[in-house]
Length: 99
Image 1 (cartoon, helix red, strand yellow):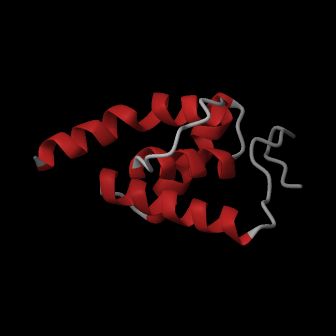
Image 2 (image 1 turned 45 degrees about the vertical axis):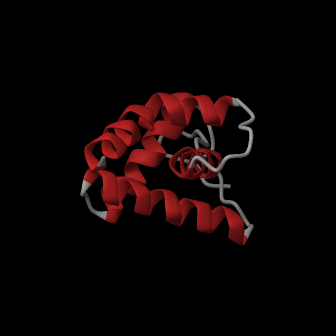
């Protein structure tokens, strides 16, 4: 288990490749939207996970779902709500600017 400087575990190592793929994809989404570096985007995900007390992998997956508007029903769980809170406005603005 990974522990931050404050002795907390705001994110955990996900042993599944799907978790890593979701994390990489979410970082890519933020890089594209914010036009920032990979490190900045990754830190944004970590910080958001800490703010909402959600694993970075769950939050990354929720961001990918939010960005893809995958057409399947969303669970409305904590990660989905956190992703909407953090990035829905940014995604909406990006889509609106492309129309």
